[in-house]
Amino acid sequence: MWLSADEVFETIRMIEMENLDIRTVTLGISLEDCSHPDLETTAQNIYNKITDKGRYLREIVDEISDEFGIPIANRRIAVTPISSVAAPCAANSYVPIAHAMDKASKKLGIDYMGGFSAMAHKGLKPWDAILMDSIPQALEETDTVCASISLASTKSGINMDAVLKMAEIIHETAFRTADRKGIGCAKLVVFCNMVEDNPFIAGANQGAGEAECTINVGVSGPGVVRSVLSHMNDASLGEIAEAIKKASFKITRMGELVGREVSKRLGYKFGIVDLSLAPTPAPGDSVANILEEMGIEMCGTHGTTAALAMMVDAVKKGGAMASSYVGGLSGAFIPVSEDMGMVKAVQMGALSLDKLEAMTSVCSVGMDMFAVPGDTSVETIAAIIADELAIGMINNKTTAVRILPIPGAKAGDMVDYGGLLGTAPVMPVNNFSSARFIKRGGRIPAPLQALRN
Image 1 (cartoon, rainbow, N blue to C red):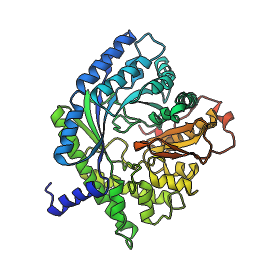
Image 2 (image 1 turned 180 degrees about the horizontal axis):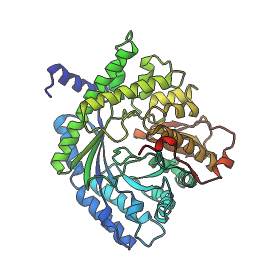
Image 3 (image 1 turned 45 degrees about the vertical axis):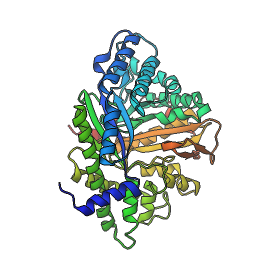
């Protein structure tokens, strides 16, 4: 498709003035051939394969970024869920594998590595339980490794035993990394309807249906969309939707261009473009600010969910026009700490946990990077997770929770992580108990809409 001079200059302006970037180029690597009955051998096999398949990733991505003049924020790797790779091992901890993954990341100059993961949405196998029990120590002792657990799906329902277990693990992870403001929990996410081709951390993993090596790209661009809307003061909502769709088209085309070029030079399969609008702490690079440009006085007030639904729909339509290989999560992220507009909305009292939960019913991916007091009970954490997974299960969409219990913090405190992780305002939780419900355990059955075969 030929671009006019005006469109070329417009893209340059998006990059220079509106924080447009490729958020991540993620190399997916299958580790299915790395399993061995001996844990140390498995860990060494994993290190060897990652460092072999990923040895040119950073060099090629940097080369393309320089050639095209397109900022690429992160280089990441996603691997086969480790619980399945480690299943044959006679071991009671998979922490050595996390160390091998972290060592490989650092050798390759990779920002993050996803895949310290397990699929436990219908039942908990022994190797899944070992993986989950290994998470607190693994995230305490590594810098780049990220963990994700599938706890629910529309087809299977919600594994409430695993939900409670994960709440305990999140709590332990927070306190193991208390000296770093519970940073371990920023690298841990739980899912309903977990996808196999997600390039975004902390949920990235290389699904069983993927090729041996795959390149997936995650684009960004909320600053671009906000800038477009800032010139549409008198526009109707239909006109605003059309403008968002056109901006999404351009952002997605750029993402596919980069992804296909990386794939070509590395000799790996091109997978998908994830066109999620991913905010950063940079001023103006905010999903909340987009909603406010539409006419919402502050993100979180009445009308926010409707505005977000319209925006996500327009983003998906524009992306689908631009590429036949849209995948991953694709929509809009609303991580509280990483979005200055969301942080301000919490501080001003406009955005509560309840409203945040409601917003996740219409966007990707869920309740993300939100802080709660350190004394929040395990049962309350489990209940927050269960509520979010229920939204995904009933609506047949991906939802997730990345919750940050901050040791020693109380509602109203601020926690500064710096960089892309931003600043998290500690949000109050409901004081009434859900413990009796959570402790019943078992599995919440799949909804009727699961019977579609």
